[in-house]
Amino acid sequence: MSEAVTRAAPVLSPPSAKAGDPKKVEEEEIDIDLSAPETEKAALAIQDKFRRFQKRKKESGP
Image (cartoon, rainbow, N blue to C red; front, side, top):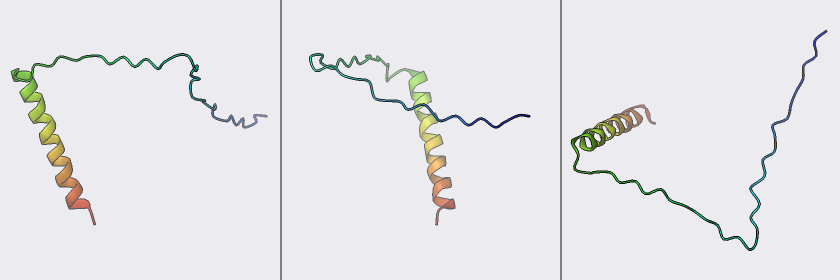
């Protein structure tokens, strides 16, 4: 017969940091042309979606 097998989720521990190693955080520099027509079109689309979201949120709220 089949038995139900339950498995616990693995416990993830934070990565260990050595005392002598400084944390290296490399930030990727992104160069976006803010005056490009594609950028302006994308920004307007994002703003429109956000405004619709806010309007629906306000209408369905208490």
